[in-house]
Length: 82
Image 1 (cartoon, helix red, strand yellow):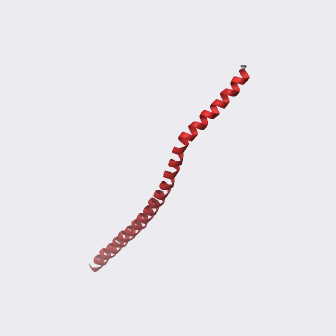
Image 2 (cartoon, rainbow, N blue to C red):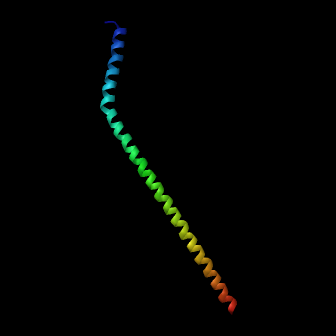
Image 3 (tube, rainbow, N blue to C red):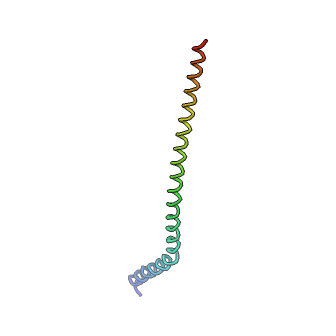
């Protein structure tokens, strides 16, 4: 056998080994992709939850500010009485 033929056989062997490894471990990638789809659903749910929490926070901030300003008004009214 000359060196050219050995080189061709080595390339063919690497292709076959690569195909076997891809067949064996490529299956795992498909499962990982399935998890990614679930993660997308989980991500969407978490984004919705964060959005709802932001809305609640805005409401609480508005209530706090309104109470604070109404309290300031009441204090000013009491000061004006004296």
